[in-house]
Image (tube, rainbow, N blue to C red; front, top):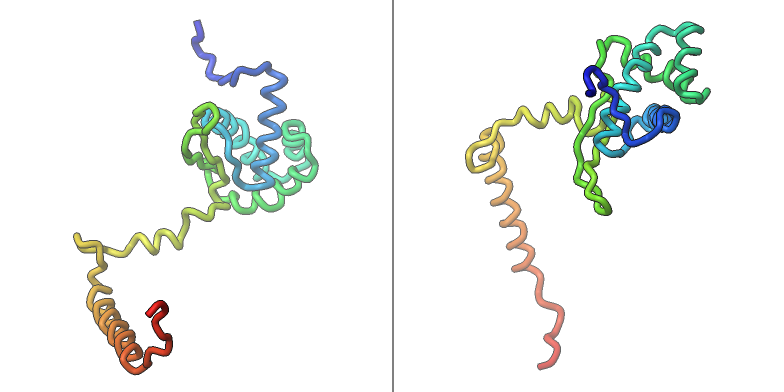
Length: 174
């Protein structure tokens, strides 16, 4: 029976799983987002979030503890300098998992895991765009009248130059 055993083994030995998660965590910290399978992304989230929490406290002991997990000096410095500043006031939840389409070769569930504070898809710009209210026909009430006037002006501009310009090309084949 499997009572109380919550670790997803991912079909790997303990040493392989440890090395894979360390490499994936290093890639996530370097690139701020990676694409992987959904199971690996969920396992990586439980692996990397305590490491990011430990990076908030910049002491020699916490640096050595994080280095024991990641085994990459440059990644540790990036984590403690850049990422720790951004997540300083966030109480956990440093990563976001977004499900993607299944992989073509084996139909595996794919996911994008990213650091929340380094996103480009979601953010303040996206929130401003969502505040616009639309009618049932799909137009915004505030912009419906000006857009109609602009459309009429554009049609008038297109018709006027067409009437003024004479046809310079002669028909071919006649």
